Length: 198
Image (tube, rainbow, N blue to C red; front, side, top):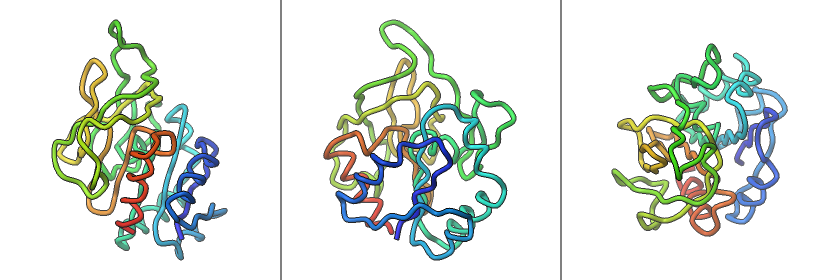
């Protein structure tokens, strides 16, 4: 069973449908203790990084506990950004700090606008379980204004004026800046690969 965390900032309906399409059983936990029995956790998110503050200490400890027990964690969009130390979008709002670095505002430079909305391609600096069977330069759907830095944990890079981490992986912790639930067959394959990690 996959726990889809609802903190009031995610498009849960679309994510739930996409997970059902790849055969995943999904539940939405009501309290942090509900995470004790799940096989993996997905933290989606849209909008402002400050919304992650709804994931208080108890939620944070429960999610970190999942990671410490070797169970997979996937962050989507703002959920990926939350894996990092924080974001300049919401100074003082801490991330989960499972990845090093701070998320920054994308640079608006003609013809590239901010927010970055639409289809863009993925480049793979290294192999990853999350992109098994997916060709480099495949297109996925983005909608965001802030992005994570490219680090050693980056498994996919996308360029919007400057390169940013469009996907990360460290052990059983994964994150994607794009929306797999809106990215057609490529997005469904990413979710299926996440299930394979589970």
